[in-house]
Image 1 (cartoon, rainbow, N blue to C red):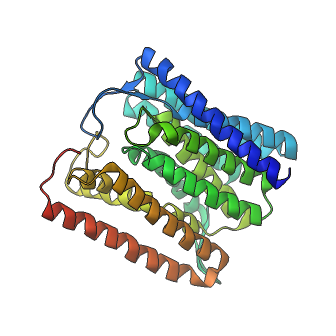
Image 2 (cartoon, one colour):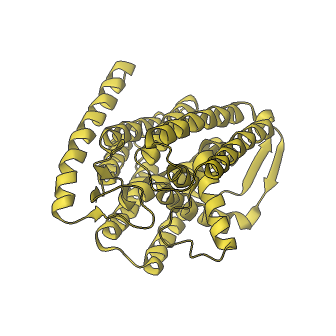
Image 3 (cartoon, rainbow, N blue to C red):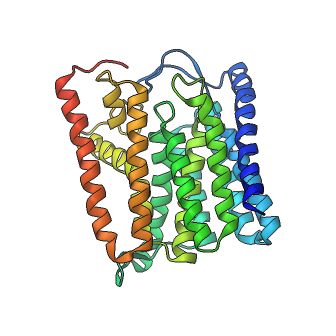
Length: 344
């Protein structure tokens, strides 16, 4: 496939997803698959939920097509099956609102299948020749990591355009990494995910007319978790590079959940405690928050790429990103002190 052909495919997928999401929006509304205002949301009114189904369909079809083109049926076919499993479970949850226990049980089974198919992370590289060996502890830690990234994406999907923007930035970054390391098949799939997310974003930018839903956010998070395992095993990508790439989401979700646990709050229930939600409640506009987040995500992507290429600078990249994100947390808290909380 030439670069021109690839560009045309990417543009076509973006346009197709824009049309598909628009069609899905009406179907979902008619079937009452919607988000009402609750303790977590920042929107007003009733909005269709489940637009991520279009992205999930694109992912599965893209994986199957690239499996046929490359002949990598075992790896890409298994990844397509896992994406299908995550999306079916999550769409069912969007429609029927499963209880947390059975949902987590099925998610755990899917995460365990991911590890059985692609292995687990047993080493963490933190400099050019320095490694932390995890041994057998890598298996349960990887299981927790898959579950965490899948659900973390869902936690952070609470503001128009935020999760789609992170998906676009991460997909482009991972496509570059994979292409440079010779995996054109997965690189193309990442570009298709980027295109599908952009087509969705045109409907999801504030004021959104449709949300990703669990079928979008959890499926995307689980797919990225699979890529982390594959990249770590097949190409020796440092796990820390992935953490840096998703630094904005990881930091916000982890600090928020930790704070709620320390306060003995039911962290699994809907809430408005994430940093982006707290900024919105100070009166800052959705556009400013999301554009600021996109800027942070882009810097994180650059630092992640530097850490991948220059392994001796991993610790420096970690330090720079920690300073950057700490500054973001400080600015949120300062904004809260200056402005009384309100609903955006």
